[in-house]
Image 1 (tube, rainbow, N blue to C red):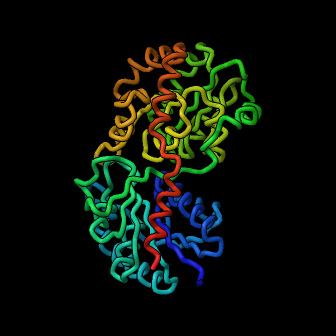
Image 2 (image 1 turned 135 degrees about the vertical axis):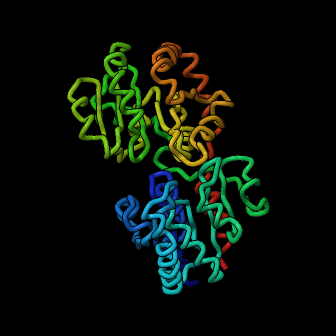
Length: 363
């Protein structure tokens, strides 16, 4: 039996990259002699993160369409055509059994070219509201793996499989790492720990909030692990000089920060939401208002509606943050209830279920 070959593409943000890596790792564990290749956008973060995870990646000259008239937009047709031509030659040379896209601009031309060449394709849509790329690809996809209900209005119903979002396997049982986490971040086991997550690139508004409220948070007896993002690290790193505060640009061991946390403040990108359901800690979501179709609010509301999390809009932060946070941190019963309810929404086997669908398509 010849070894299997897979091409994966997902990028731009951690929310597209990590699901692709999780799927690749599961494929590798099922087919140890398989060949796996990634295709990304040549100037985006996947060009670093994928090789760090041990996989080869080829970059395409592609970028998204901006909402305003820019030179980039004028170049878009040229970049798209160039990326389609390059994708076609990558596929013809590599001869994959299946091509998998987890969103992001590079997956567009790659999956389009695969469809034209008759290669089975799988789309993995993380959000409750699909992006432009996946809507464009849906008609020709073999299978579409989703994490939210009611996506028939965007995708052909007969192609949709409800799997949930792939997550890193190391976060499935974080409680066992609590002791290691306390030592790693030099935490006081007697105090509550707040974990602040702004997404892989960081969040200006969440960083401004935490900087403003830090003294107040410390006065509540809370210690803080604050992931501010690489763009903001120089601006905020000095806060880490204080006791009880860890300021990080990027988190390489998510299992440890989740183990340490008693309460989490987070953006509500789809991957973060899926991970937080599995981790099962009380969460306050602060959705980014700067994403297409406001899908972060929709992602968060899917959890809030089932009483699994709290939500604060950016516009409410100045007036509502202190009362909402102090009520949560003082109320053990509320923490327990949120924790139990969010866990019920976890899809622990999502990665395995997606790979099952991929395997069915191997000719």
